[in-house]
Image (cartoon, rainbow, N blue to C red):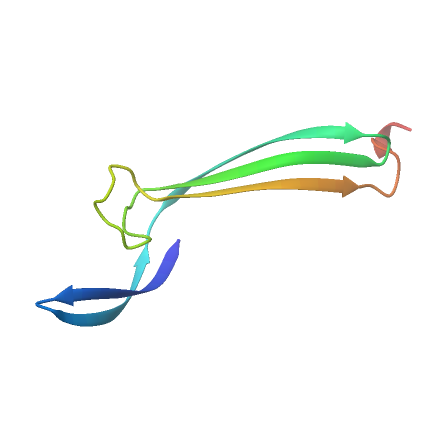
Length: 89
């Protein structure tokens, strides 16, 4: 992952800004549950966690004892053109 950010700091009562970029590794963890709705539909709940090894992504370093992790969740509805499952007619 590559993060481009602008950091603002106050040193000796003087505000300074600095452009920084940081590259880091992450481990993706994904999962989901799917439920069939009729012959043509499918409803799913999916989630992703990007577990990182850095606490410097958002600029709040040292305020907690955990690294920064990115979360995502989504609800997906799929509508198929042929009956489900189409290979077992």
